[in-house]
Image 1 (cartoon, rainbow, N blue to C red):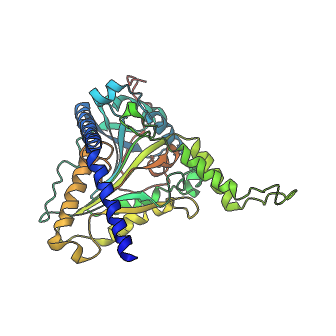
Image 2 (cartoon, rainbow, N blue to C red):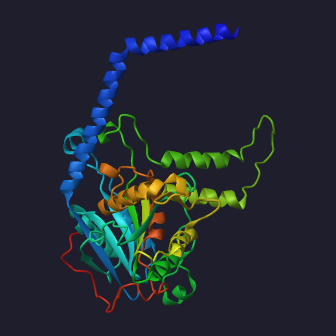
Image 3 (tube, rainbow, N blue to C red):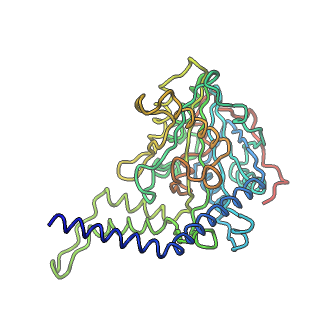
Amino acid sequence: METSSAHFLVEQLLVAFRFLYEFSYVWVTLLFVSIFFNTWLLYRKALFVKKQGWKLLEIKLPKEIRKSPQAMELVFTTMWQKASMSFKDTYIDGKIVPYYSLELVSIGGEVHFYIWTQNKMKDIVEAQIYAHYPTVEIYEVPDYTIPVVLDPTKMLMWGTHFKLNKPDPFPIKTYIDYELDKHATEKDQETVIDPMASMIEYLGSISRDEQVWIQILIRANRDYGLDAGHIIKKKNWIGGVDEEIAKVLKKYEIDPKKDPGKPPPPFTEEDKNLLKALNRSKSKYAFDTMMRAIYICQPGKFNGSRITGLLSSLRQYDDNVLNGFGVGLFTDFDYPWQDFMRMRRTQREKMMLDAYKRRGCFYGEYQYWAEKPFVLTTEELATIYHFPGGMVSTPTMGRIGSRKAEAPNNLPV
């Protein structure tokens, strides 16, 4: 019996191999077409990105900002641009969906807010920030990452990517949950907690010999079809939100045949809040997002508590019912035998630093390297990156001394 079974299995394998051989001209052709297709698109997109030219903008804050994070949400809403593309745009010109990098940086304890953008989007970004934050000052500055070169004899480095703990449709805890949308007066600022306070305080505590870089790369979440370089259509995230809403509602459905006349059970408070959060997220613009962070120090000055502090400073966005941030790929390894003579860690550090400098994630050499992008709405982004008011008073956060009357009047709108 066993012999006949083995004989049957061998025959089936021979049939499969014969089929693959006889139709090899089909699948080999498809394989080469697919490889050529993807390689060509990567090349054209990388060339397009290189030609754009990029600017790093630093935003200097005044001593007082009486704006809720909703102002920053309006800025992000304007930055959401899906860029309609023709086949020529995609396959010949390599046109891409615009993307940006939002950066929170501490250099020796001095906290900086940066936005990295294409040359052609610079005026739009400046105009929108001035429109909602007229008292800030925006400067084009040199890239702070350029002087940093990985040399284990002169610096130590640790880096990580972040990911969501749950699927994309579940939102993190936002500024609306903290009721920051309802408070803007000086009196309110004395009692209301800004969730960014923990992050700013952490960055301000960094010593003179240390640096912490936090990078949030974003681009508009949209449908991707053949016109955008996807043979298999990739839909936006709304379908996933609808599925999660349907799962919650299904728990409260009553079969009229099995239980005629029985009223549906009341919603639990947990499910009420979940449905409210999902529906609110669904009404917002959404971005494909990637987050990474790097800690740098001089040899002999490595402080492990800085890593703990970095991870803890994101915990105020976590919600057990909704979502939160977790650690993705990081540069070191759990056990010594996983990394002989530190070769793998050094390689990861080089790639992490280079990817950060290039702002690489969506296109080019570091496309989807280490972690795939997740989705955050404008509301969620405005929660983790906005210009805090007087309630955040870290002395090392660079605020401008005088208050500006208004934004420059020569900015394009």
